[in-house]
Length: 234
Image 1 (cartoon, helix red, strand yellow):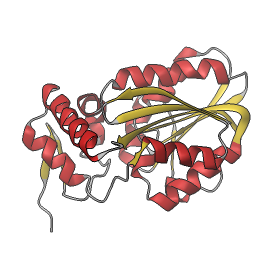
Image 2 (image 1 turned 180 degrees about the vertical axis):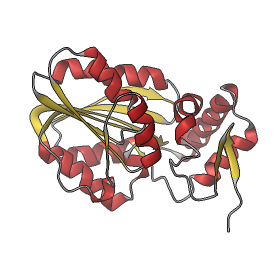
Image 3 (image 1 turned 90 degrees about the vertical axis):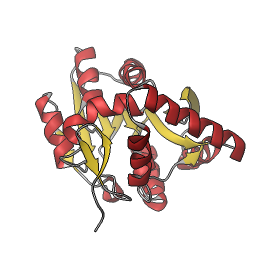
């Protein structure tokens, strides 16, 4: 049996078993800001992009809604009637979203089979946690369901295109975490917890998958260290 390891103050986990459970969810909004570069900027972009794709009575989907922060920002941004639907596989995270007045549906994205037509969607730091075949199936489903001309904002942790640059950006990323208040031990513990739980791709591999799924426009709109964001248009 794995011993508990500390990934942040108040967050315990296990090696090769990172889950967004009751140990993580109450601290998630604080932890993610230490762990992910420009997290608030990404949230701002997710809400702002909705200006171009939403219209009265349309549907907005959040694949991996977590604590509901993105949907909350989109809801507060618009007066027009929007149907906001979030999906997440953690009851603990869903409970945190409910505290913000956001309803999130409990769903395993690796088995999601019924996606309603939608105008705008977000998948922030989500696809990287899906096993490759399930991820590909979901991306294809999304592309086949989104309205023609609809938009999807995807943000992912990525691998460097070359071994040398991967080593550099990986170390810079760890430096960022430490400068944000995590200890070196917590940074390594988190890496141990993510073993076998995260399946990142290179920028080229991500874009090839988006293109094969049927997105006609693929624009890299955000990049910081190991994280990239794309605006995809059907």
